[in-house]
Amino acid sequence: MENTKAACSKLEDRIKDLEEKLETMQLVADNTYDWEVYRDNTGKLIYSNKAFERITGFSNDHFLSGKINLMDIIHPSDYDSAMVIFKQSLNQKTIVDYEFKIIRKDKEIRNVSFCAQPVYKQNKFAGFRASVRDITDFQILKKLKESEQKYRSMFHENKSVMLLINPETQKITDANCSAIEYYGYSKKELLSLKISDINTMSEAEIRQEMQNALENKKNYFIVKHKTANKKIRDVKIYSNKITIKNKNYLHSIIQDITEQRIAEQKLKDNEAKLKAIIQTMPDLLFHFDKNGKFLSFHQEGKQLYKKTDEFIGKNIYDIFEQEKAKKFQTAINKAIEEGESELKYELSINEPEYFHARFSKLNDNEIISIVRDITKETNSEIQLQKYLGELETLNKDKDRYMQILAHDLKSPFNSLIGFSELLIKNINNYDNEKIKKFLTIIKETSNSTYNLLEDLLVWSKSQSGKLPLEPQKISFINICQEIIEENKNQAVAKNIKLICPISEKIYFYADPNMLKTILRNLITNAIKFTDTNGLVTVYTEQEQDNITITVSDNGIGIAPEDQLKLWQFGNSFSTHGTKNEKGTGLGLVICKEFVDKHKGKIWVESEVNKGSDFKFTLPII
Picture 1 (tube, helix red, strand yellow):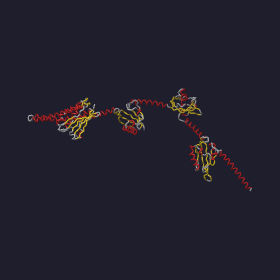
Picture 2 (picture 1 turned 45 degrees about the vertical axis):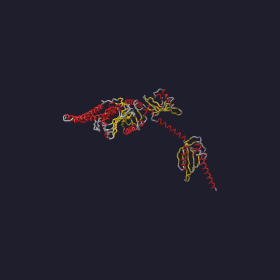
Picture 3 (picture 1 turned 30 degrees about the horizontal axis):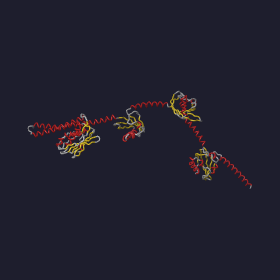
Picture 4 (picture 1 turned 135 degrees about the vertical axis):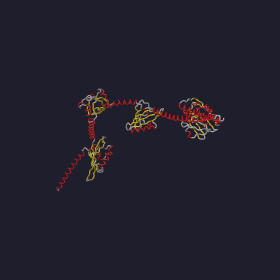
């Protein structure tokens, strides 16, 4: 019995000791700095200490009873991520220093750190304990320290020259190591100076500029500063107002620009020289990007077919037609790839103008183009080519002319000489009929040779410019009737009807002698190549600006391959008429010459065995 009592007494003492320790632990847990929480393995809240009220401002009893929950405490922006962490804790994961925001009962937002650790009982997961610590003040302190370190790094350790100036006293209150080295003073000496001791501006000017900086009206200055060795340096200053312990200061960053100013002046001088050179250049200087966009044009006053603001900033496809723009882009692409390229192009402004452009690569994205007006040179070259062509034609014509003189005149003169010798030798032996036959041959040959010489003379005068165009107002019907009358006997000889069915009087400007020659040749040819009992008609068709004159026949016609030979002196040909009439081969060449002088056109429409229509145009009055 006594043993039992003794055992009970010890047990009571043990229980009392445990209760005292439990009370002590409860007291410690309730008064710990961190908010301690315990939840079982289902997530049910089992324990929350008094620190909850200090950190959140809410009642701990209300939290334990479920009247308030985590949604009322955790900031909405962090709630979803906090719930993920909460689930990880239930999955027996240890959480270390997860930070999120809470909203206190008084609506103040605080930053907290969350740690969780799983609890096991008999090797089975029983739940987890969590500690939540308010770290807001710690973060503020941390930021303050970081700010101090940043200031030390940004100011004292900065490679830029920096000064801190009191705008009221103009005293230099702080200077970094770079400033001490730049100005050549010790730190103690430099901090004993006013800003006016190193700035060459007057105190009034300095005071005004400081006020501008304080009011943020102007924060950028270029002035001259004096160093300890009395050297004057050009400096660029950036000043901004900062507030330290409710007092305004000017934080000034000083940059030495002495060498830059010297370089800038040299650059200005060089730019002025370059501008003067560019302005005196006869060429045009354009600046493109690689896509053909006009970036700049540096020659104000140069005569262009567009104003500068009409093409700067625009693409070549906005300025030129598609094909020309493509050629420009191809030249630009080649210059980007190979370094340079060239392009010749034509612009039709009032009249065609020609240009040569040289493209040079400036960088991977830009091109410089030097454009030269080569209109005079090109026109001279075109004119030279024209003269060369004309000279070649004249040489061919000269050769043909000599050929005609040598060949076409030789044959008739041989006939004349031969028949005349026969007559002289046999004058007493030939009867009158034979003598008449030989004289007729001599006469016809003489007439034919004369006509050839006449045509050659007319053509030669036209080619040498000795037969000028002298247009005057004329009536076509009068001219036409005159030429028909001249050819009447020739037409009657072949019983050919020759008519000009024009009743109204048509007036136009033309050289009457040249027009008569044209009509005479065309009508003579029509009669020559028309069979007996045929028809030759001369008629006109009036258009808006021109009159078309047609000499039409129903004769033998001209083969297509021969039609091309009609108009060129070097390729001219002559065939016998339907009654074996001879021609010179120059008539149509002369017709074309005279029509060309009138700025008209001449052509033939013909079918073999059906006839020919020779047409030419002349301008109406």
